[in-house]
Amino acid sequence: MIFRMGRTSLLCLCISLSISSMAFGGLGQSESSCEDEAQFFNVKSHEVVTNEKYKVHTLRLNSGMVINEYVANNIVFGVSWRGTRYHPQFDKLLGVHFNEYKAHENELHHHKGTRNETPNSKGSRFSTLRTTKIVMTLGGHMGSPSGSAFAPNSMPEGLSMDEVR
Image (cartoon, rainbow, N blue to C red; front, side, top):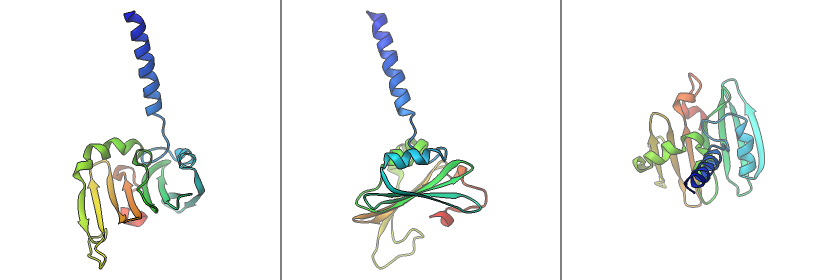
């Protein structure tokens, strides 16, 4: 009986590990995973634009949200989004960096103004999180959230986050 419970437990563990390691794309994943993410989000269109330093996969969702995934050296080094009612599912967008976000979520710094901290007349609010593995900005206004997340260690040399927002 104990042996059977052990095998059942081992089987459950193996299944849960294989499910949790399935990648849907997102930060830190390979470029080929962008297609998996497009299927997961059931996108209206998926366009790829290439410049000399990186590629941008633009996913336009049926909801109206637009997600950009920035790729260099076959790795997604950044994501940004803007659009409808809610922020997208971070567990999908942040990929291998989702646990880093969750571990430091309570360290989000809240600001008033624009992302470069120049006050504006609307007084919009945004939040930032900076760790050694991820730099994230959440913002927008009611009904139109926006944000970005980048893995500084995966960015092409000589490229700044301001260039790809």
